[in-house]
Image (cartoon, rainbow, N blue to C red; front, side, top):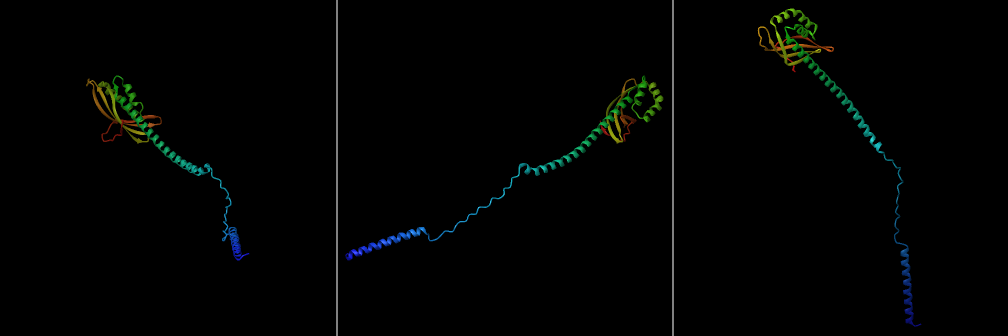
Length: 229
């Protein structure tokens, strides 16, 4: 073999070895990386014990209890207030009813006392003694004969009319009633009827289920009247 051929053969052999070494190196590099990666640790937490959710009734129970307590207190307060107000209202109504009754008794008695006819005096005396206390009845009994004679001699005829009244409660179921009335009268000396004003004061007392006139007479102008009726 010539020198040139030997040289070419040696070069080819070196190139082949270099190629094989390079391929081996690349395969080794691919199989064994220069830096190994650290492993990643992933921890999975253990499942916690499940807590059951409260029902609507359990959640609402405290609120319902408080509301019921508040409602109970309000009911008691309103009940007390209503009881007191109701008592005051009934007392007011009863008081007004008594005043109205006293006024009516006084009006009726005034009409009987201002209305008379000398030709029927028993009816007059019956009227003024009816619905009165024993003391007032006795007063008319004491003046019966004298008054009857005066009325008969004068031939008095009269008719009364109540214009208005006022009532003042005096306590102990007693009322002072002031009555303004007119009386149309005529007699033997005055044949034409004339109207005369009268201001009278009556004491009316409630005794059990009865209403009695205990006093009757002309009003003292220095006295004070009650509520107008």
